[in-house]
Image 1 (cartoon, rainbow, N blue to C red):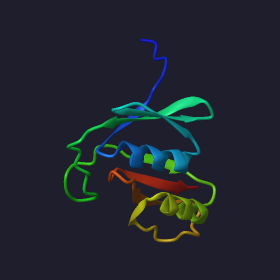
Image 2: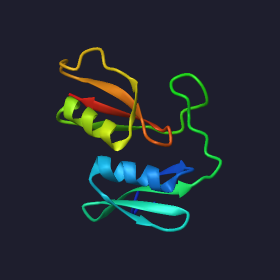
Image 3: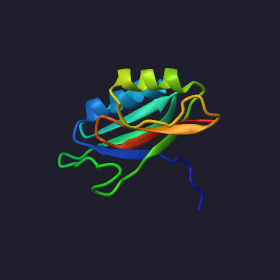
Image 4: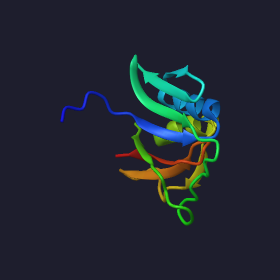
Length: 120
């Protein structure tokens, strides 16, 4: 099997909020259709967003099953944290020590999908 492209797709009840959040966080642009948005970063398709009017956000860590999460490795966790929060993220789990050589913090995007900002 030859795979020519891989796209992670997020289900969401609010296409505009979800796609613009990830576009801001990843530095991309959104191409919008009625029930689908595509996120392009540096001209390449990176993420898809599908309209799911009945989408129920996962409850992390205990609750309805987690559907997906992304690990985003960053050079500066403090700067990345500020940018994520300004974009509309919600902090779910704080790291024990932001000055450690490696670690992660857990956030949720506007649709409730968990993602981690990692370093090290």
